[in-house]
Image 1 (cartoon, rainbow, N blue to C red):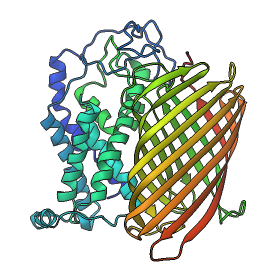
Image 2: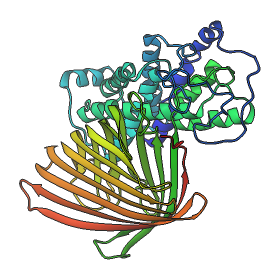
Image 3: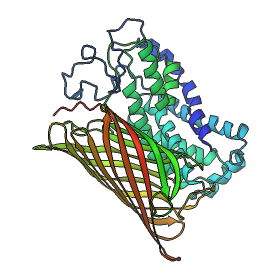
Image 4: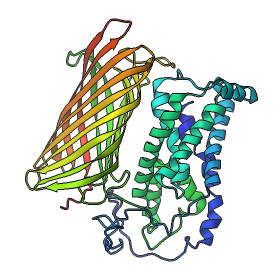
Length: 505
């Protein structure tokens, strides 16, 4: 499979089928030509906030958050598609994907038929040999598409998970002539649901069916970039053009941090002795973790991605995300806490090592107020890792086949940030992974990553910063000598921060 195939084509058939919902939507009277209340032309990214005279009044704390936004999608405007129609969309995604693999890209694995289907059903499952990025990034991305075939059409998170599982199961048996893969089924389902829910929530933050004109165009555009399948469905169902007088979608505040600058990967620990490329980072913080409220699935999550541009094919350097599954808020004096259970997705695919994990565990997020504009933040997470991919060698992978072990174990994350008067930001991030091999070179691996950084505000929301990364690994293979290594990286960056938390206590 290729990125073009997954990113551009996997949603096409599903989106076309969503046109069948248009007649139902028309019949329900949800598409109107009525003029709506006035709206702002200011493109604030705090959910593209509408002024208070337009927003719903938060009179019911069970329905609205502290900002007056819905805690759940408005069921009066959400038409739930029949389950069989969502299943057809998922199957259609696979059919279109296979057709492009077979007749456009002429891929060998797409040469399928009754004999390959019989062989797959009779022989059973294996751990495949696909390259790391395919298994731990692109398969979850395709799983997000299966998930949103249901989620974007009226289904809850848990109701949508079976569609991700079913889409992956169908593909593994019938979409390829290779044996069905255990690791693909897990990654596509579990991480696919994780990324699918995040893309659904983020696209909802941009959508607002009360708006019209240029603002509406940009809302639909940004939402479509985040969730293409949902966008095609909205277009063909007429939701691109319907105008309502009420808010429809759940929204939470969204913080966004962009940074870019030169990035050096050293040869060992020697400062500046390595290749230089450009790194672009996007950090998303969805939801206010310190709002006193009843917690629901994914009403708070964080997601960070690094892209590198330079020599070699490594572009997606890492993606780190976590979302709350359940928890509660606690307030004690000048300290606020969110304590709960979290789902994690960690993907490292750079010039030094490869590591991908699925994890579930407990965590605490806290804030200590040090003054009017100074705060100390702490995020501590501990998780069990049922499935991981861990490289067997140090250095860039240039092969198209597996050079990593399948395993599991545990992980921990520690992040603390000190903001001093909105002018200085000191951050320390630490990650530690223990991976026991299931399939591959037997043994234990311990991987640690620390990332101290400092950023100084220079103008408005712009800052100038420096980050130092230390990667170390201790590998204890059963049949080979132990291996220990340390590598470092440095980065200078310009950062732009969009703060949309409305800091209310």
